[in-house]
Length: 116
Image: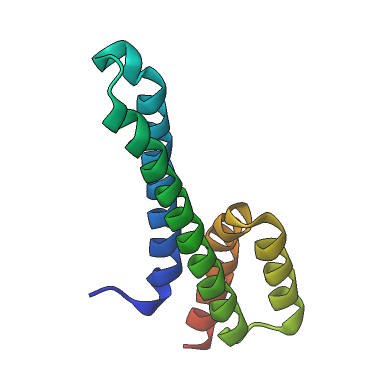
């Protein structure tokens, strides 16, 4: 079973997977004339599929950002740390979320284990 706390991470990983697929699609689009010759179907569909993947990646990253912000807002940390993490995630996007995963969530887990 997937925990609710894992949803932001899953959304970001899905977004990154879509970006990787889009880049692969664009790379194939660039080298396809050398591999299979001038194929009109490939030349017309690959840019469209890459754009759809990029839009899907942006949507997933946006959902992940919203979920991280919701997680921070509902955390029982002091307001100063909440403000710092919200600014970091809004300003740096994925890098802010990775920093929160590495540092912020561990701080919160440590404080919760101290209370027990």
